[in-house]
Amino acid sequence: QVQLVESGGGLVQPGGSLRLSCAASGLTFSSYAMKWYRQAAGKERELVAAISSTGGSTNYADSVKGRFTISRDNAKNTVDLQMNSLKPEDTAVYYCYARGPLTRVYWGQGTQVTVSS
Image 1 (cartoon, rainbow, N blue to C red):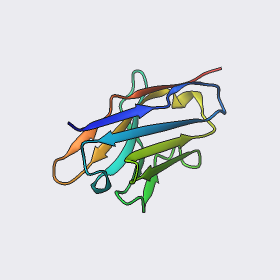
Image 2: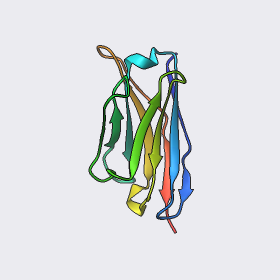
Image 3: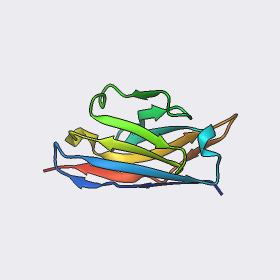
Image 4: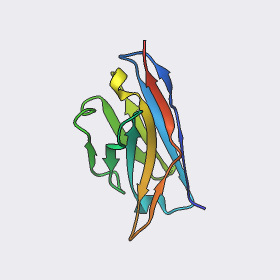
């Protein structure tokens, strides 16, 4: 019933920008903290950015601070990740993650981001 659907991934040159979006359905979106994770080939999945249920607080991995911005629109049930000044090391599958009350946790299917010249 619950779905998280990512979009916006693709191929971009170093220094370029992409905007990822995650559309949520089947849950009370405003009750969920939202996060973006990524997993590069051969590496562990890592937290990229997180935003509280109200959007009042955010946090970022050190590797993306100053370059990425997470935001949410509770009226549209979406969370976005604006990625600027992209580097080859940002290449990964990016996953949307929702954390709600008690044990409720959901993952999106992932979207590929490739940064290459």
